[in-house]
Length: 221
Image 1 (spheres, rainbow, N blue to C red):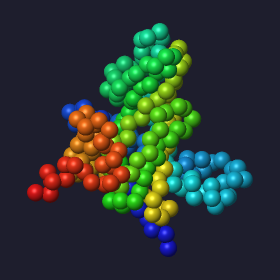
Image 2: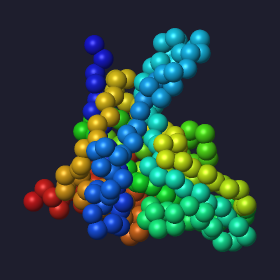
Image 3: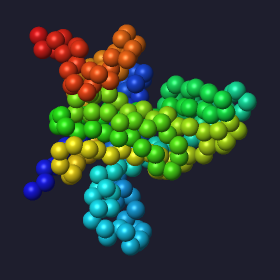
Image 4: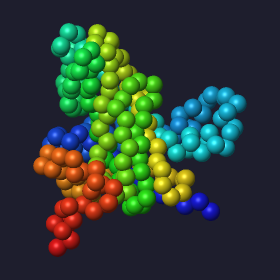
């Protein structure tokens, strides 16, 4: 019998006064991620009956936009054509290199698990994102998505649009994704892991792979 690994997640806004209490995260409002298999359940391609495809589709989750967003890079200026206050509330870092805009906007997701063997991979759905792959079971950190677009390209996103996906690797192939507000210890570990790069650049990746947090002694006392 294949092992079921529980993976927990929670949307949040890092710098908000109540990071986990935004109105868009309410139980009757928030659009939860679905497995890719559930996302395409109304389609009927022949390969949907393939066991190998189903194994992949059950282990890939689609995340959705929680609000309407519309923006473009005009010259060297970010132009927001949707609700400016909401957009800025969820917006993170921006960077322009050549004719390409990289912009973070959320919500961010805190994802964690007690299974030390699980890795998580963040991948695109149908729009360009900056992908990621790290040992989730050994390194708690938030997922924040950076979207890539060309200069003068108008990006239109509607609430409910699929934006990006994650999938897992590790022991077993059955995973359960559960929404839960994290305890203070999980939040603290994620914050410490995220900020480590500001003080010791380049150290995070080696520590993550070993699974030994340099701050562990602080909460073991």
